[in-house]
Amino acid sequence: MRFTINLATRTYLDHRLLNRLAACIICVLVIITGWNVIRFTTHLGEQSRLDLEITTLQNKLGAKPSGISDTEYNRQKARIRFYNGIIERKSTNWFSVLDALENVTPVGISLSSLSPDKKQEEWKLEGRAKSFKLVQLYVEKLEASKNFSNTLLISHQNLTANEYGSGVQFVITCKVVN
Image (tube, rainbow, N blue to C red; front, side):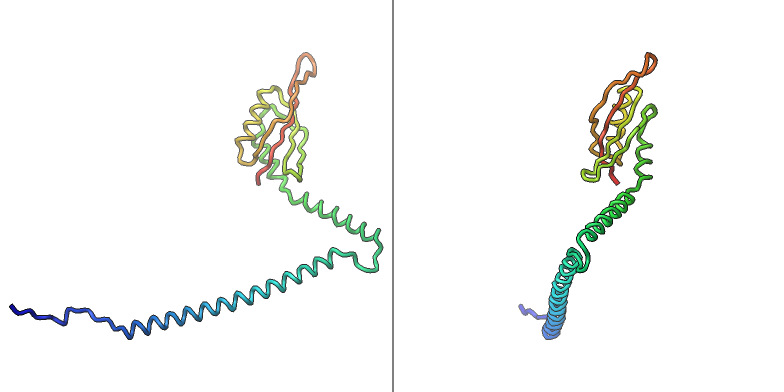
């Protein structure tokens, strides 16, 4: 029996071409890596320079300027705090808060006071209702609303105006979600 080998069916790879291609790819990756390392070190140096400049400027702003008396300096700082407080109060979108409260307040509930507490980010709602059932419904609506969280009934008491009318006075705290 005689076996013949067909050389045309064997796959040949050009190893020189593959080696050149791999070397080119490695060279490009080394160049890109070097470029990224250079960029990183440059940005790191720039960041440390900017941090030093920021601390220098903050020290200049925190110190009292020369030639100004302590009383004038303290008076100016008090004015700045006052105006910053006004700006902070104006940053609250009152229309959206009042609109959200109006949407969840049922008929028979009247709010007499809305007090925001910036430190705890809570609102204190004081009001009156015809019955405690309405207060309960109001608390449930506040809890169900996506605009309010951490709703808590702080206090309530029955009121009697005269023999014909009575009601409930209540205090609720909640957080307004923007």
